[in-house]
Amino acid sequence: MRVTPTALPGILLVEPTVFGDERGYFFEAYSARRYAEAGIPAAFVQDNVSYSQRGVLRGLHYQHPFAQGKLVGVLRGEVFDVAVDVRRGSPTFGRWLGTCLSAENRRQLYIPPGFAHGFLVTSPDALFAYKCTEYYRAEAERCIRWDDPRIGIKWPVDAPVVSAKDSGAPTLDALPADWLPTIEVG
Image (cartoon, rainbow, N blue to C red; front, side):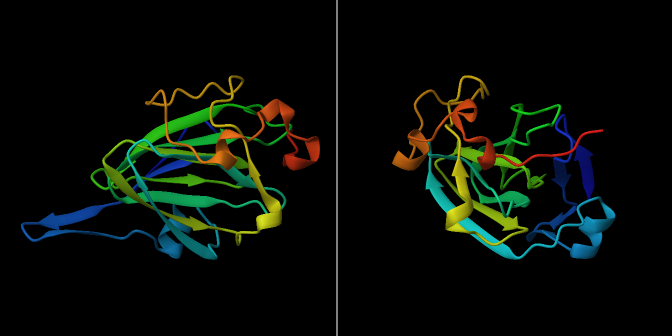
């Protein structure tokens, strides 16, 4: 397994070791011991699966309080996956990172608590799986507008299919201060 730090501190790109032959392939999608040794010591408490068609954009979502770290990957298809730093006091506040995750490349992205997350399906359909470090809590669910000009995400589609909740979400600058996590820097 290869784990690569990204431009946003704490976000890690995970490329599992794949064993394949003429029958197919096998890889370890998660091992608490191995992932902790690689710098992902998270204790995951919930697994989620999402199925979507081409052009569907889900996000940008996060929880506060009760922030969730996420280990995300694709079981079928391909997505453009995005994380945005929403931690007040962070030197990378408002910056985003995007990467292609697919069933073919088998990459995973570890997104620590304090980041908003979203993805856009770029294949005919996609089966997206993710592990969370905190349970889903409806009262803590927060959403940031997917096309917030301050963040400036370069989505690979001009007119995605977006839910009413996501299209009506506030921009990062319009969020109440108590809806954002704070980190101590120094």
